[in-house]
Amino acid sequence: RKEVEQDPGPFNVPEGATVAFNCTYSNSASQSFFWYRQDCRKEPKLLMSVYSSGNEDGRFTAQLNRASQYISLLIRDSKLSDSATYLCVVNDQGGKLIFGQGTELSVKP
Amino acid sequence: SQTIHQWPATLVQPVGSPLSLECTVEGTSNPNLYWYRQAAGRGLQLLFYSVGIGQISSEVPQNLSASRPQDRQFILSSKKLLLSDSGFYLCAWSPKSSGGNSGLYSNQPQHFGDGTRLSIL
Image (cartoon, rainbow over all chains, first blue to last red; front, side, top):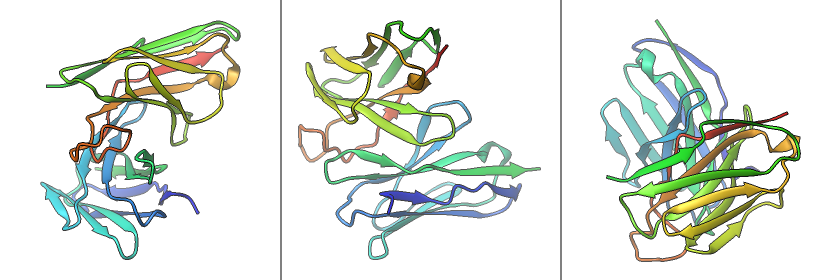
């Protein structure tokens, strides 16, 4: 089993749609969780940290389910500019961050 | 605010030539530093990390080496490049853990430089 698994997509959605990404992780001892966004041929950029109680930043909502070992990212009212690859990131027991392969999102007009 | 600079942005090198990529961080001290490689259509692979000056840990056996001669400077090198060294190289930094752990473990996110796209011919 991969340490961090994501549906690679692509997810093709119209503007204004709500889209959800899920990510599963294998290490039950992981403590730190993040979502990054990576535009084509660019560096990954931190989108948001994921907290146990769930957290929201504008149109973006992140949830953590420790019992089932998965993280989710919900994007409401999708914009064309949301088109990117979304990376799920989890820390391992040694403290390193493990990056998922990413889920590609394409928002169409 | 903290910034991370990485150069060059693009590099084309012949097989067997040497390599030196440089990364510097500003606006912070004693950061954890990282080198990643991302092959086309693939995920991020951690190559090296450093928790302090002169302290380098290698994640995978390879044709590359890293050095940290100053607190906020991280260099990726190779004596002889291989075709398989092609890829997108990313430098990243993170602050030490908010819990005071001075080692690799950090509950803080990492922040990336713009990356270097390396093509080997």
